[in-house]
Length: 350
Figure 1 (cartoon, helix red, strand yellow):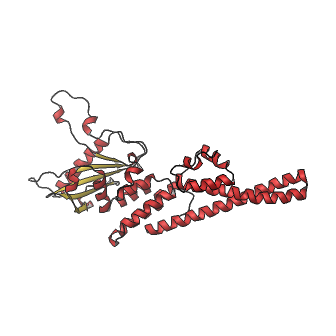
Figure 2 (spheres, rainbow, N blue to C red):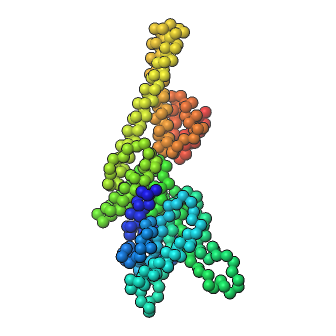
Figure 3 (cartoon, rainbow, N blue to C red):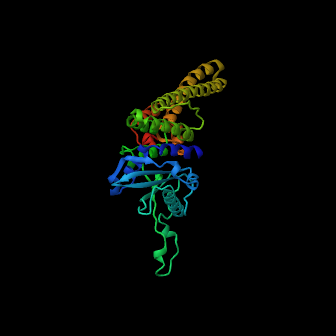
């Protein structure tokens, strides 16, 4: 989890990521009035020790008309929802205002700058905590409500977005969310093609590198923990490596299947030889072994291709796969090219 936290902080330390986060996921008119050319990360020297201890939080500011607007970006990676997030946000906002006053960013004549408290959450359960601190306060006697704090934070819950919502967006943060939700090598490769296209300029080299580091250290080990990954620093290298790795897996699966099938067929031949005559049985067994080996190899290869495209297979699908003969395997391999679900591959076969 530490790698995840650190990698996300690196990614959202780039202005392009914060701009795409605001443009793509804050559906409010005032966002269009921001001057993103002025977007800058607040210097840590402005921030007190209390805020610096918030290692997973970032503070940016951007010009809105003639004033600064601050964005307090809180990266939340807990596996459970924080019911009192609104209290934390109120505390951090107070500390931020105190530091701006302390470091003479504001004078007695100045108004406090507006702040957008933004919580970016990527946990599994959907977020259900109160977003306004007022909703956490008990019912108060009439007249006392005016003394109760009112502060709401904006939530971006990654898991609440479907791939169909994210895929059409030319947006770096949408690509990040899609990579988080990806299940197969094919998914990752397709998203990488977009990132390589969007991050071509020399000025984006740092962001390309940080995306690559995040993929190598967080996403790929989570998907395929048994695979040893080389040190890679560029997205194009990552795309090429994945293509080569997939081809290598296909070859290994095919060879493993042929070997298993040959051994299985050979054993069946010897058993048949004991019943029909040793010499004839062995000869038939070797022939059956070659045929059976090819079928088993093709079955294992199809299994890997299904996993690469659709993710892990259910026991029911595995059972259907193991029942396929050579003719059915060929038919399924052809269907795999256009199928959008794993069930489509097996429709009407059995």
